[in-house]
Each structure stands twice: as C-alpha cells, then as structure tokens.
Image (cartoon, rainbow, N blue to C red):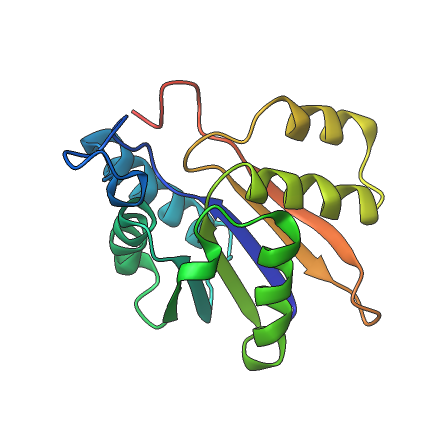
Length: 167
C-alpha cells in the first residue's frame, strides 16, 4: 500500500426508526456530501483500489454515494470497523496493505479521528496542521497519507467539508 484515505461517513439521521444505531441512514445532505467528497478526492488524484467499509447502514450508503467516482474499486464490508478504535482500523488496513496501492476506509468517529491524529503525529505534521485536525473531523471529512519505504506515514491531504456540508 502506498496511500491510505480515511473518510468519515456522510451526515446521518439522529436515530433510526428501530432505535438501533447500526441502522442509522444518511440524510439527503449526507448522500450529497459523500458524493462531493468522492468527486473532490478523485479531482485530487486520490482514487482507491480497495475500500474497507464498516457494515453500518450509514457507511454502506456513503460507499454507494462514492461508487460513481470509485467504479473500479473493490469493496469489503467489515463489521469490525463499526465504531472501531484507531488501532483496530489500522490493523485492518495492515491486513490488506499488500493487496492494493490505495486503500480507502469508510468509518466512524472517534476511531477515525484518533487514527488521523496518530498518523499526523507519527509523520511529523506541523503544529498548525495538527491544530486543524484536532479541532474537528466532521462527516464526509477525509485525510490522506502516503507511506514511505519503512511504512512511516506522510501527510498527503486533509479535506474538510465546509460547516453545514458542501451545499
């Protein structure tokens, strides 16, 4: 793996009809923002070969919104990514690192946000960048990292949607 993209799911309803958090779906804004995030990543040259997607409804729907810009990408839905801690996400990524040049993870906070901060710190990111990343990692935000020959992360991009979404 040369590049890792961490993408938080799109804006979701506050609760599902069943009351089950796992079943929460995207709002119309969440679907639009997810598509816009995918388009922006593509415009920046960040097209994944493999997507690891939490099996929650909102992450699956985020993936469905991304498919038009990731049509050649292989996808794997993974129940262990549902509200996974940073280390679990990283372990899943390492499991597939030899199978793709660019891996996309569609997941949840706080685990994704914690992993973004961890990789920024490991990669020696500037204080300004760390402060920006610490302040928030909202829905449809993405962080992109390259990995050097020793497997160390190098910051390659941080995409934050404007407050209120891409509308």
